[in-house]
Length: 283
Image (cartoon, rainbow, N blue to C red):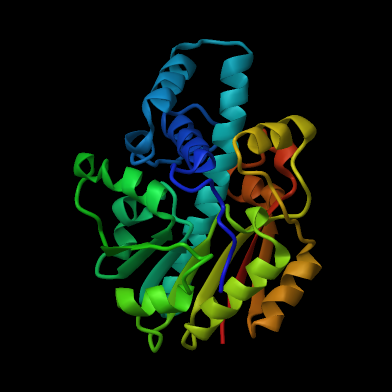
């Protein structure tokens, strides 16, 4: 049927909120990644997130600021690596973008390259409803956005996308960012098969995954938030799962690769060496 729920039913994803905070920190210039910009991130922060951002930007030194810069580095690099993969997918002919587990993703509002494209944001209802409450604070999106609310425990991704107007005959770019580590391997494979089944030739799947679990403190925090990491893959295991769905890996890159490409190796992300992105061609 699809994937198990990533967050507790009835409330917005707390990890999605932390990702937005990391992007907002980097957008405020508090990272080692030059040229990063995501003005949408702070718009989506809740009151607690806005208070945290204000304290971080007001701090001139100390542990709080350095920890925040590390979070900003990590989110900025991951975001820029996926943005680059999206642009490459469009160059290969993608005409639609589907963001599975969209959270507070701002690409439809900050990437002018998406002008004229259909953008489908797929997420659980509570996070999506919270996000939509903030949209009046943003300029119109570059692409035509469709919000697809889904409970994948009870609904098929294939069915909800068909009802939302996704055209399986047109090349699609899929973003699966910050999601699969919260799913069982079986659930990930089932959802991947549905993605591949809706992908025309020249489609692209971008999947962010972890090769290991976070450190003890970070793992404890996410468990207390109710969103613990469940699964991890080696690059070989991820490639095998993608092949099982008929996808072929074009590129598999690491945090160190993104650091070298986008920050001249200056970002402080050694603690996130477990994070990778696989870019695959779909059937």
